[in-house]
Amino acid sequence: MSSILFLTQVLPYPLISGAKTRAYYVLRQLARHHEVTLLSFVREDDKAESVEHMAGFCKAVYTVPMQRSLLRDVRAVLKGGFTGQSVIIVRDEMPEMHRALHHLLTAQSFDVVHADQTSMAQYALYAQHLNMKTFSRPHIPLVLDAHNALYRIPERMAHHEPNLFKRWLYRREARVMAHYEVETYSHFDHVVFVTGVDQEEIVRRASHSEYASSHPHPTTSVIPICVDINDKPLVARCARPLAVTHLGTMFWPPNVEGVLWFAREVFPRVLAQMPEVRFVVVGKDPPQEVQDLTLQVRNVQVTGYVPDPEPYLAETAVFIVPLRAGGGMRVKIVDAWSWGVPIVSTSIGAEGIEIAEGENILLGDTPEELAEAVVRVLKEPALGERLRKQGRAWVEEHYHWSNVYTAWEDVYAKLISRNVALS
Image (tube, rainbow, N blue to C red):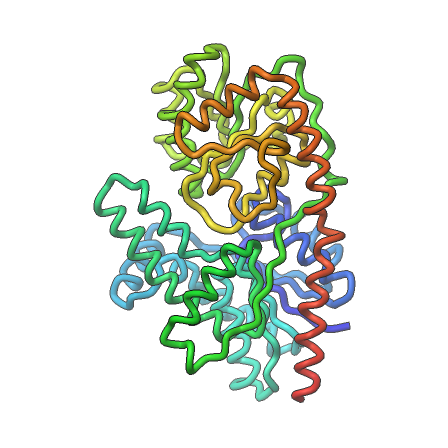
């Protein structure tokens, strides 16, 4: 049994986002065969019972408050601008996490350090520095669960941003983030992505980078985001559902852009054919421009955060994923399949996920195509029922964590055995 230090940018419970879902089930899998110590940032709305839940299968859980403020954001922008660093990465530089790592590594050593998401890579590297330079211990393997090629998100956001200054900012962030990812990943022993698309993008960039000759490429693999279908019963839908529902955190820019585009460009085309349909936006912290949609477009409802989405899912005829930017994979699609809700998505929204178009999902990328797909599901109950049943079966076969996440044991077995051989 090996000792693992698991670093997360978000507390992995409750399962209210793709990032949390990913970290939670990976941690659950590793805790089956290893002793896992969790060190996580926490926010104001993280509850003590959520920390206690994680302690139920971790050896120990330590938390560091994530201090967000306007002053820190301004500092990140200024430092990023003057140093050529990614603002996203600089924003998450917290001395409190450095102190927590120093305290923890003073008291004990670990066999592997696991960083969840690229923003935590800096702390895994700091732990390695402490381990070797401060405490004179041997090299320990570093694992990064990168989730996705992060630079692709601002790169794609720039394509649809009308404001010239914001477009420049997105492109600048994409450029420096791509550089950061390639350079940083080269210091890890193994990097895992959730889709082959993101893996290929990073490997391609790494092979043409300035680090290609001086830094060995890390071993990479692909392990998708998975869920526990046993915890997600089929939603009992009402007799005639008439809602087109978007579910997702509304402080994530690609969600905001996608919802605004769908409401303004796509939904009016749906209303023209089915005037009784509603567009329901469910998700935490919707910005003012999303809230204003209720005044600008007929039959739009913005709920904000809801503790239980089931009442809204029961009235959902179409689960819409209108993303035009993003990276990795959308766990909301896997969740919607599990709930048995018909899905209509853009190609980018479904990117990186194994799908059977026409059987468990419909796709459309232009306003006309997306509106047509939504109307088809609304008007053809048999199609909606097929999408429901096939989606549920697809998750059981391809995205159940207890079946798929045994791949993590292969990653760890190779790293640990190699480290033992070198010691």
